[in-house]
Image (cartoon, rainbow over all chains, first blue to last red; front, top):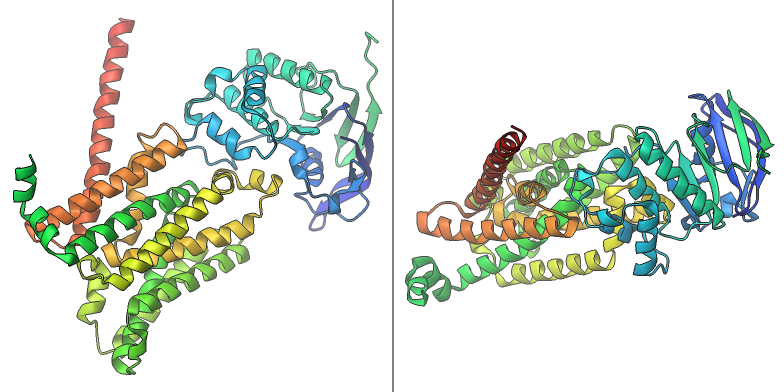
Length: 217
Length: 297
């Protein structure tokens, strides 16, 4: 998915959180958004998901103004925390994935995704029995259920052990190599062993967008 | 075995009496539909809403009594229909208030409950005190339901089940994760409106079984028990329905044998199942803990 953000300024009440942010991504790009707490990272993501309402002509997804954009199923989103999910009531991984699936993904495709994310053996497991790392991967699988063209990950490895973090970023790199545009929010770039193509460093709502040139290229 | 079954006074009475057959059929339908809706209510942590709506229905019952007995509006036929309308009105008020107090959504419940209780108090007084019929509605009147009401309950059950089958994915997603449901393009407000409406109708028809004061227990207690033993969402809902149906049949049978009030006995059966699960789970966990200790030493 192509993403264009042009001079985006956004605030809550009288406080400006994002100041004049601009960047552009083409299909298959991988953007890292870095910054301290309160720098505006999550606010930027909420603008891109249509949760924060913004004026016309600021964000374009595949050349469509986000204010007119209808198909948010093209965006896979993995939140930082699962506070919004009521996961004390029994529900299996398969049941969550099937309730989230609106694409014509076959059962075999779903199994392939589960295998790639490393949760194939957990498909009939009640999510109350899963660890933080396993739960995180379930939510990535959920984000992939509608064949997304853009994957947005908001600090997805917070509270996940090191072994799972490595497996997690391996899977994300593979998905990106398949052509999915990825936006990753992180405060720990060293931990994120990813093939970033672009980076935004946010500080007090102001961002510097730059292309990443890899040393091995 | 067959001879034993037929020799049971309850079975004999059931075969001989239409009113008992109607009561059992009504109970089974309500026992099916209430935990079905109750599961979604529990997931969304809105257990208090059923109690709120039943109290608001009481206002409908008392206004109905006033209109029929004092003003002579006999065409209303049964106060229960007015209770149904009030339950729906109460649900709409809750939805409006939940939208108004975005960060304090639970405020809507005590406001609507107080309003319902105050209106009930006022109209009971205007009607010259609590009538026997109204008193029966406080604790349920399943043994007196007529054919007309059985038809209403059947239609409501069929409509609720159909809606849940058609919109199963949306309802599950909205209940478990509203934010993600919005991202998936699900019209969350529209579905919330529909589910609140269903809830209101189910609460009002359930008044006939266990009454205003106990109606929320039909929705919540079987689900609370099933949550402790269910392995998946569908499995948990099925177990909740099973617990509920056992309580309905057991409650009717016991109330007949022991001459206990039916609604209260059904609810007490539900509570007994819940407590039994808690005790059994406790001993299973204790046994597992001991087994683990044995293997480590």
